[in-house]
Image 1 (spheres, one colour):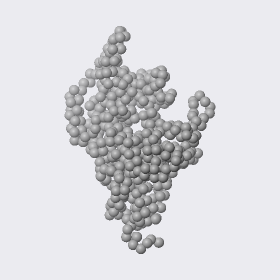
Image 2: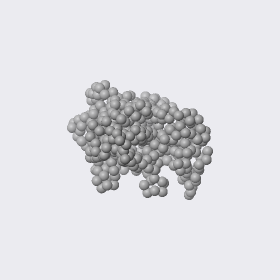
Image 3: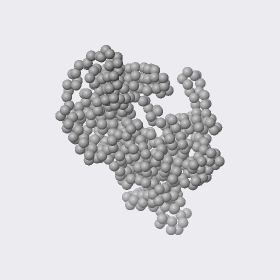
Image 4: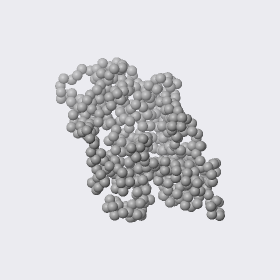
Length: 518
């Protein structure tokens, strides 16, 4: 039975909710998040949406203002079919890295779930977005919504002026190159809402006045027979074009001789969106781990204070358990390591090491073991790491044992796999290093760079794939992508696979040899 007077302390009873209940619960969650956990968040904007609106948000990569493209409609139909057949559930929430931070809550949620996802998204994800160094360096939360509004209106105007087919053709090629449309090692200019729109208008007006279609008709120049002169010319033009260039979309936007101004702007829009999502790909474990840890801590605090009922807490725990469930490797449901499970377990492990360390913890983590400063340690980790470095620094031997991790060595020339690292001192180091490397986006995505092009000659665009560990590109995907590059470039495009260690050329492919090219 509930103690007398305890009911008056409850934030809500039962599963029904209204906006007054949401507001009261939000205030209680905020007090714990700010005062006890020390979180620093953007102002929150909570919006209630239906299941169909959530499906629509799925299809448009989670952005509230997104331009139209056939691929979004295709994904909507796919997700809607699975949902209505009962083969896929929907997320309880969706959160946007913006200022204010927008959190979408499903209207079908019970009040207990509304409380959980408010803690998870409006404070966990929100704090991570605002404070993690990758998001601070690569995104501008205060400008993204204004920019997306501009992008949506601009592409709609392009469709009216140039036709839907022409716009979709450019978007198809740009979307195919999104993974190669980000800056990885240097910081691009930050977005600004009003100035951005004004600069865009001025740039388009200028380019429309100066654009010349004669570039298409220029004949190639004759080859220089002097090897030294050729080498000097190549060096000079690479310097003039800032080659090699890692951001393929950026290079095509700035250098393509056939693109009209409106087409360049569409490439830029796709490139900006790709850059916006780049930090999220590098912090999946940390971001979800932070949000899951925050909601778990806050909901337990509310229960300990008598502000939610046992029934509500059981519902929260059931949902939480489903989220952090890690199927074993031989389970048909095994999808790999669950980022929610690993991230949440590592956050809890940091708290345990700071408060109640073992002798093993003191050997592995002398700087934080037994200090009691778990809040400060977590806040510092959330601010200053990405998945790779976070795992490399904080994955503990006890967690390796808990997850039963081990390291396999699988050589292509061998007909067997070798268990290379087990649960001993050396094995823990190797397992931690290998797991951290698996979350390094830069190491696991193809390294493709623009190496050379003679704009006054044959205008043949030469790309280079720096091959790591002998992993080549899948041929069909490579050829299709080259066709998209050629569509945006207008002339032949080739790619050479070069071993990153030996410098040996492993393969070469050019659009001139591909069937179906113009």
